[in-house]
Every structure is written in C-alpha cells, then in structure tokens.
Amino acid sequence: MRDDAAEIRRLYGEIDRMNGRLERVVMKGKVHAVEGDRVRLMLRERDEATGKEFLSPWVRWQGQSGSEAGGFSLSIRPAVGERMQLFSPSGDIGSSSLAVADSFTDDAPSPDEGADMILKRGDTLIEMSGDGIRIMVGEVGIAITASEVVTVGRTRLNNGTNRIGRVGDRDNAGHPLVDGAASAFA
Image 1: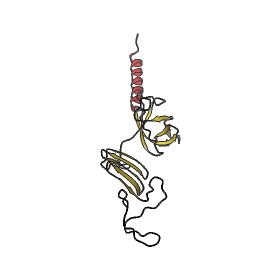
Image 2 (image 1 turned 45 degrees about the vertical axis):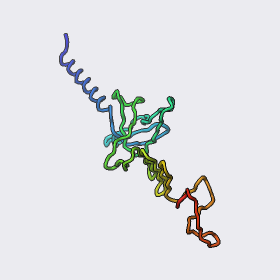
Image 3 (image 1 turned 60 degrees about the vertical axis):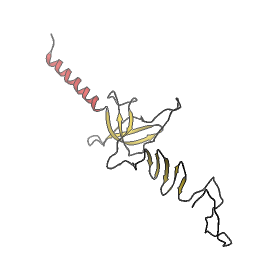
Image 4 (image 1 turned 90 degrees about the horizontal axis):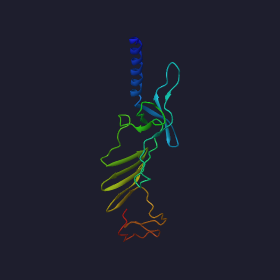
C-alpha cells in the first residue's frame, strides 16, 4: 500500500531541488579573484550569520578559441570587481560552469562611440570600424585609414632618433626651413 502523504513530501522535495537548480543556472556576481585562465566570483555578499562569502569555485571565463582551425582567438582577462554572470547549464555550480561578462549598466556603461568594435581597459581604447582603426592611450594615439596615418602626441617614426623639421621652423643655426617632406605633416 502506498503512503500518499510520503509520496507528496517526496515530490515537494524533488520540486525544491529542481527549483534550486533552476535558480543556479545563471547567477550574477563580481570577480573576487583571477588566477591564470580562471576566475572566482562572489555570488552573494557576506552572510550575516556565518560571516562567510558565497564564492564560486575557480571556473574559466568566456573567450573565443579559434586557433586550432586558424580562426580568430580572443581572451579578455576580467578585472577584480567586474560584474559577471556564472552560467551553469545543469544548475550545478562546478567545473562545467562558465563566467560570462555581464551586460552594461549605469555603473558600467557601454564605451560605444559609434564604432563597430570597441575594446577599452582603463585609459586604453581600441576602436575599429569599416574604414579604419583608432588606438588611444590616455591623450596619445594613432588613427589609421586607407589614405593616411594620423598620430596625436609625441611620435617616433620607424624607431628613429632624427628630428623632423616643419616649414617655418628654424634649424640649429637659426635659419628658417623653406621646404619639407611631401609625405610627413606636423
């Protein structure tokens, strides 16, 4: 004879376990530590009762691996404090979980300036569009299009140490320069 009450309790327990796994499929957190090619996320703040933080195990972060097939490979190392999502398809947090970059927020807005692709870390920016690329580090940078290369800030060409003069500049003897290179402009 079947005990209906025991069966209902068992089913409630199974539903609770399944709901717990569903809640753990995608969890948001902040990077707590980075080591090698793995990251550890703080998924919940410090527990008042135990004083412990709820940290993920060491998991890989999402990149793009195309090197074996000759494709495009990309790895962007997350920074401590960066918001990420922990993706665990089975609902079990473990070695098959993957840390994925979180979407933009008011605290971490998109660096989009109309380009097709932007990489930004601190004061360094790489911006690509269909007609060129721009690289900036602070206030110094370079922009390359099909027709020209434009630099901002002090520029050293071909690792050179020779100074370039502009028409109107004066040489060491004080004489004005009257002609300049046709392919270099300052």
